[in-house]
Length: 187
Image (tube, rainbow, N blue to C red; front, top):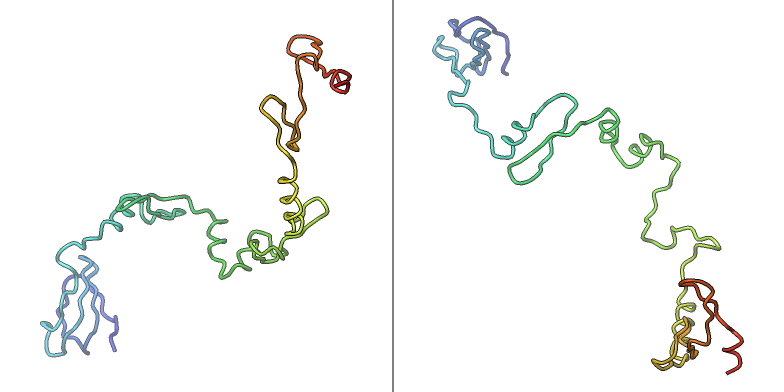
């Protein structure tokens, strides 16, 4: 079993006492492990000789600020990233292990988890109700029964028409007209 028992300044000069033993050079920061127990030549330098090259996505996070305290990286496009503030409240919400824990964090633990796309989960009131198929069918059946008028008549909302000429309205003031019902009724 490997033990990280040796620390020193400079490369190791002693013989390793066991296989896969660790040694840390505190001056250079190099890390060594033993491949055998015969001599000090059994220590191998495991420090990379070439810099580690990150992929474009990790390089983008590094360029955006990477591991700054209170920040969380996110991608803005292929090979580009940015960092956002990650508040204590945000961290607490993300730390919730399930929906119920997250709802407790938000103070919503008394709200039921319901599928809002299921009509049986939506509360109806006398003013807010779903249209039944019977009501829809009843409404749809009324429109064909109303006869249309001609283009020389004015249409009302129920598709019935009444003929109105200039004598049907009286001008009270500029751009304000009052309907003269008597002239309409006398026809």
